[in-house]
Each structure stands twice: as structure tokens, then as C-alpha cells.
Length: 221
Image: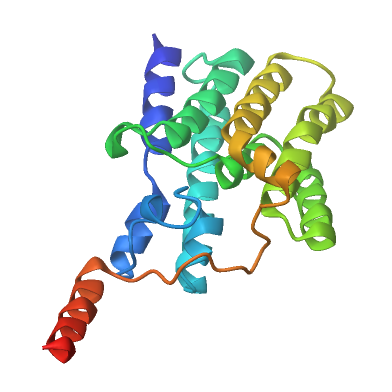
């Protein structure tokens, strides 16, 4: 029962979409309506607001870390065990991908996965992050970096701790992350994927856009 309750709590934590919340606080358009239409830090960066993108990244990573840290911190007290921690890790990740608070339209899970890995073990998180940074700096494709890091993450865990239930959970998360990047994979193959730093569109609050349209109509009159 405790494991089920912990999983539900983790899912709800994961369902908090910082990309949408932060964008609203900054007066930006909903990230689900522009660019890649993905509510994540990379797409928020396309708005040109670096502060909003950084806060989105930190928020999504923090919720993944928090859920796992709490599960590990209290696993003995609530008899969760390693299996319970693994389930919590999956639950918070799935919450980010399919958030109940945002009509099950979520992100691709890169930042949240990073937070989860750091929560499991700091060196696991560092190794995976270094893999992401190396590919990102070399090729300037955030999606490619995420895919490479996701593929290597379970192997890093295996090298550090050996195969167990947590490694299986990380492998499932990696599979889901790759699945969520299916369109990015197609774009990479076709040479259409956006590089880091590119802006697909200028995004502002709908109200501001409405005012611009009104001014244009007035000039025509």
C-alpha cells in the first residue's frame, strides 16, 4: 500500500509542468503552441527568454530529484525497498510525460530524467550529464544529446552498481524518452532538426499579439 501511495504522489509531482507554469508567469505563449510544441526547457528557450528556460530546466529536474530523494530517504521507514524507489522514479517520470494537470500533454523527460538520476546517485547523474554535454557541444542538437545520454544511462548504472531493479527502471525510462523523441529522430535523419540556439518563431503573450493585429488593421483603415 505504501508503495502505491508513494507512486501516486510521485506521479502528481511529475505532473507539474514547469514549462507551462513558468511561461505563464513570464507572460510568454504556451510552449505547447509554438516551436516543437514540447513543454520543455529547450522549446521555452526558443521564446528568447533565457531566464524562463533556465527556471523550466531547474524545476523539471528538481521534481524528479525530489521524488526519488524522498523515496530513498524514507524507504526503510515506509518499507519501500529498492523496488519501491524504482517505481517512484518511473511514476514521477511518467507524470512529466503525461501530466494529469495538463490534459496528459507533457514534455519529453530530459530534465526530469536528469533529476531522477542525480537523486539515485550523484555520479550516475554526472556521467550522464557529461555525455549530454559532449554531444550537445559537438553537434549542437539537444535531441541527439538527450538520446545518446538516455542510451548510456542504464549502462552507467550497471557499471556503478550492477544490474538490479533500479537499472531496469532506468532502462524503461530511457526507452520512453527515446519514444518521445521519435519525431526528433525523423527530423535528424531528414536534416530538419533545429540546432541549439535557433529560434523557430517569436513568441509573446496572445494579448500582445492581438494588440499588434489591431494596430495593423487601424493602419489599413
